[in-house]
Length: 352
Image: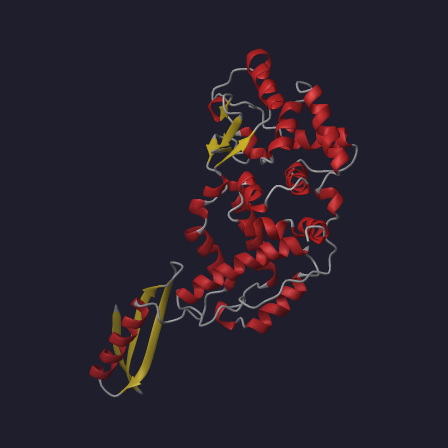
């Protein structure tokens, strides 16, 4: 609503409104000869505010980012993913501090991104940048800024990435692990480790398995939910729609699961196969079995590596591990695909 008053230099209007992130703002302008001129200008200004044309020149990137992910992301993502957004929020607060959204240019953003590259690994910085880029896209749509300052930025890091041997087991380690846990499935919760190794599931997905997800007749399991390992208060949706999937099981795995259900499984409220929240325990146990520092998520990476090595198509692998599309699989495992490309080239040479 507009208010008017006559001052020494003419009539002035003042408009109070709520901005894109819910804060109350004011817009004013003076120097009009008559109240009629001030009223006309105020009507135009109110129209621009309603249409979202007036950029809030005071909002900072940090404030807008927090509001953006709360409105557009938080309602549809898991608690684990929210932690990634909180990491990005912390980084933005540190490196962009009180910098106004409207003051960030492509060059200033790239300079800050370069500085962040001195303190973050490339994989982490890439995730932070992707979130800022998506946020800036919405800021353009909200007409707070004219261009997406993050659109053309490049992510670089001075910190060495984690070595691949910590992300992957060697094929020998992988096959030895499968053989060992298959032979001793009921010690130290090793059946769960075995199942993670031969399906490529995420830990939360394995904790969300119930017996109606196991198709003993068709030798497969369906992943359609996870267990909330953060809040620990029940089932949660899968990471995304594509994560709902079916994974084939071999005869030995079906036999193990049947034996487990009839002889070793302990009934629980939710009918879960594995009712203990064992993420940290599984990490410790895996290190003992393998004999070096590897993470339980390494089993998922190694599962993909093993399938690629044995000629399984990328599209099939992408569906098996629940990636949104094959591009993510290609980007994540590009180094493995490069090795396969060399082998394929050698094979092509023998075809003609």
